[in-house]
Image (cartoon, rainbow, N blue to C red; front, top):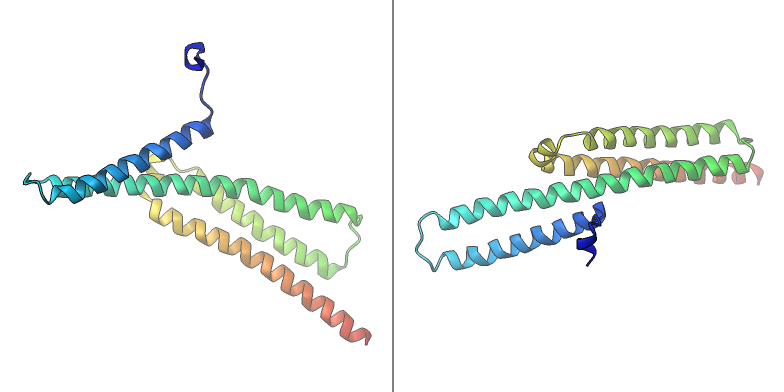
Length: 167
């Protein structure tokens, strides 16, 4: 009944349906590929394999888009968390702490820039470079993780040294 009223599907609902459709097509191609050996139709098996490769690329491209969307939501939340905590302390932190925070925020900013570059690619480029983009996204996530770990380790060391000096 809603379709008669002309309501539009949300972008998320369309993406979800698209993913289901692509999975259905992939499953159908897999089944047809296994049956193709029994049927003597020249070129059927290679054709199905080629279509299957295209569908796999579509799936990877879709996953990359989802991952970039998640990153673009996650990074601002992390930055806001740091800024809110700085505000709670009135900005009165040691120079060493300021330096660690600036280093962390700089790493996140670079990750956000890299993420934005990937997001700005056309759909065709996303499809063509889906494997490379997946590697780049993994690199972005690793750089964020490394920055967080570095911040935590440096903070832990600072605490240990402060406690050691005091004893």
